[in-house]
Image 1 (spheres, rainbow, N blue to C red):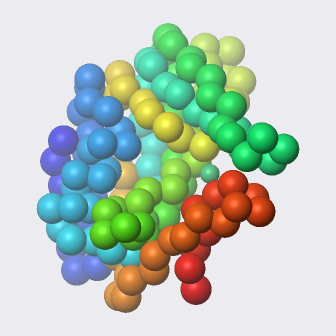
Image 2: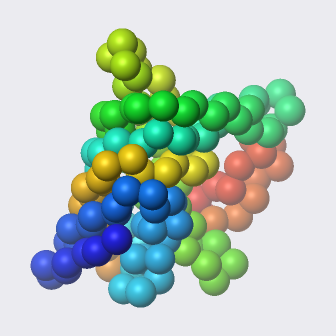
Length: 139
Ligand code: FE
């Protein structure tokens, strides 16, 4: 993993074999980023994505293995209980170029990941909302 900061933007590279969510969280901690957005592209060969079941209020998780392009990662950076909180969604494409997507839980990078973090001034935290079973933005 490596990164380079230019004012309020950070260019990110996460390498083969590294876990994507851990890598992004580590960079946010090192640079003390408390609020921001993330976009990125890359590739993964082991990824777990979720879908929130709104009746059970639990994520249904599914793992995909083998070569997949990360066609699009988009997400935000906030704080919860004093810790960096990443909310990331992912679209991946398989060998047939079919897209699959969902809430990103973990992804092992198979070649590279290239991301851009936008840093915003201020801080936004989250609180659990029992009605929907999510950690809502506290605004
Ligand atoms: Fe989500």
